[in-house]
Image (cartoon, rainbow, N blue to C red; front, side, top):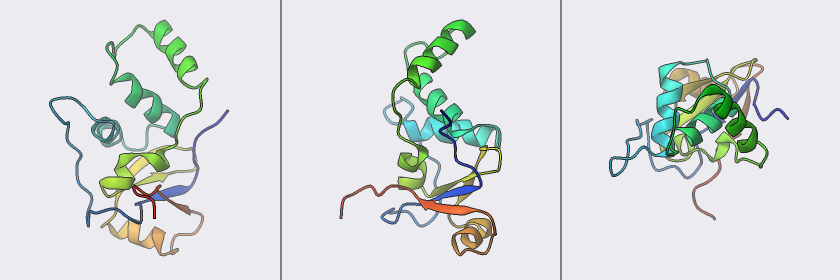
Amino acid sequence: MDLNYYDTLIAVAEDTEVIRAEVPLPRGGKPTVASVQYELLAADPGALTQEDVLFESWLRRQDDPEPPQDVRDELRDRFFSRSQACLRASPLPKKHGWGLLFDGAGRITLCPMESDEYQRIVAGEVAGVRVLKAMRTRRR
């Protein structure tokens, strides 16, 4: 099953409280989902898919974030045997002002909400890129 998006921007949630993208910080000395996802995407733009980010952000927050490859493969299979929330539910576009731009191969780059590229895509000026809003933080 393919969980990735293609030629898509996950735009910042309508109810975000930020006016520009901010780097999420660990809390209480521990990494948060947002800080791990940001670290993964900022370190290697355009290299990871949604599946990669979901699994890696989960794995890095476990007791043993560096298991051997055979264990890692088994953990990934088990992780995706259950349904997973997509990156529309990620705190990056919900709370921190980062759009998530997926290319034709499903690879993600961060796209700050204040950037010209983000503004052009959201305005519909970039052909072939579908725009989906991140999930709201609060109910209406």
